[in-house]
Image (cartoon, rainbow, N blue to C red; front, side):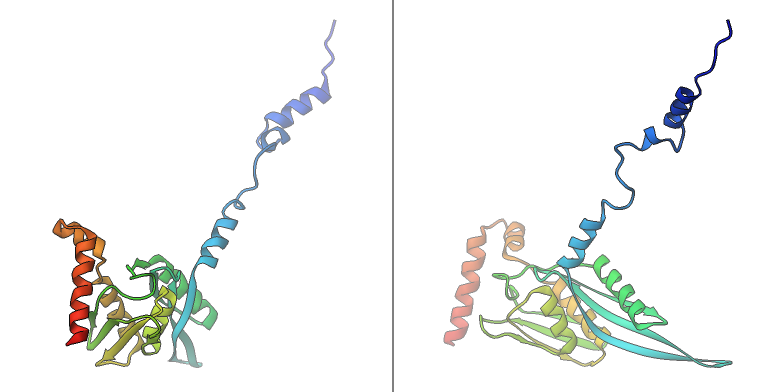
Length: 214
């Protein structure tokens, strides 16, 4: 007796086993959508400030062709900060490139009480030199334009800074980061010297009191 094929059952099985069948896609999450909330949280975590925009003109056969270079500082207001530069034919695209580069070049800076630096420091880059000094509460940010953007995005509330030898915003930013990289926390100094953190802080406070009396 000849067997009659069950076309409906075979078609259902073929759809379930096939590459694009319904059986393979059941219970699967959409591709590329799981990382969206994480990316939004990372973007909301950082604060970015535009420091400088430079317009460059290139003379070509048909006239002049303009391009833009942007310098951006990014930080999370908790001690992490970075800077980046980007070039493009349009200003928004240049800012986007600079922001992405800044997020890739973040550094962690130890802060004293979450508001100021642990100690005074200096930084150099090219002809520029910067001096950063810790300040008591209520001082505020006393610094020039590019350096102020770094401290605001980093979360510093009290600091005194001075830049010498240059007014180029790129050199000022790089000299400021050179100074920030030389900062040390009492915990790291105590670990290097084999002492307790209280001994390092006590000695620092005693020296500051003696200097105030003198």
